[in-house]
Amino acid sequence: MILPKSNRLTAEQLAEITQIVTEFGCKIQPIIGAVRTIYAIVGDERDELMINRLEGLAYVDRIDRIQSQFKLMDKRSDLASHRIVIGGVTLGEELFVIAGQCTIDPKNPNYFYETAEAVKEAGAQALRGGVWKPRTNPYTFQGDGKSLDILMEAHRRTGLPVDAEVMDEQHVRLALDAGVHMLQVGARNALNYSLLRAIGRAVAERDTVVLLKRGLHMGSLSEFISAAEYIASFGNPNIILCPRGTAPALDGYRNHPDESITPLLKEKTWAPVVVDPSHSVGKAAYVPACALAAVAYGADGLCIEAHVEPAKGIGDDPKQALAPAVLADTVAQARQLWALRHSIKTA
Ligand code: PEP
Ligand code: MN
Image (cartoon, rainbow, N blue to C red; front, side, top):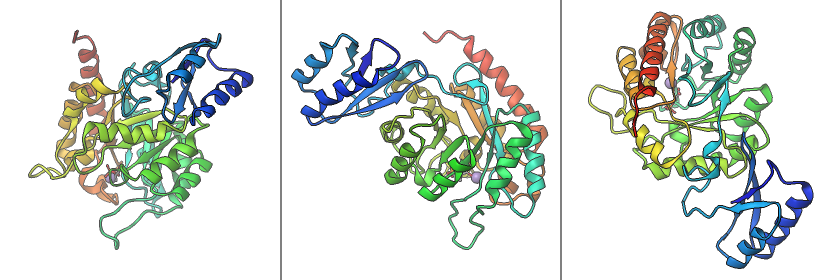
């Protein structure tokens, strides 16, 4: 990784370093951070002669040679100072809450508009709404592209940035063309490397944020962070890790709650962690406790399913969406706990 002295290399400087690394069979991938752009050397970057020539350039501050399977997402990377900003929130500076329906019902858009207003009122800074849905049963409602218009209309009405899951390249293109601010990679696609690459390529030149769920099958920390590295390696490091419970389920819960993974992730990566308690426990009555536990474990945010009238929802909403009043209480308590947690010295 090449760290320049300035915030960004000029075109001539970039051409010069590209020429050097090309001689050694490598390529340069600029990674645009909020503070400065860094230049990842793609390929075998251990050749001493190449490093010496790069270090000899007057405009190069230093070459970062951390040995890590995920050199961009690693906590020791220069990107550790990168800050993700969405909905006016800088992740890590205050609790970030995404809330909204599991699934937008294209036949009843008003429920979504009312949900959007309610989650804003409850203190959420971003709105979620499932347009295309990964469903276990092929005969159940699979989502509907028309819901994308409803999602964007809710954004216009509330001003909240919006998040939707994408499952293939066509969804990625449609979502980005429509102006979706946050692309969600679901638990079933968390290890779909072609999709991760396609998303990385598509968001490379944008400020889009990617919410990457943890794979369903209790994947290791490295597997989870490496999936984020796939996306970041194309140039956009705005990636949030989202634990959401793993299989096999804890008897009575939808999955095995895994909010306790957060301190472990934070030891290895600088990426913010936003926990999804809704899919973790899978029942509205258990969601507030799981949300608070997540904050106690150090989560930077929460992704909560909510519906203005859960019983009238579709997808997961009847069983796990919080009603507006419960969401508002949960968010208020989570914010208090976040403040308390950040006043505790952990060193
Ligand atoms: C969802 O967010 O509605 C969803 C399907 O999530 P997951 O991929 O975590 O199951
Ligand atoms: Mn859901």
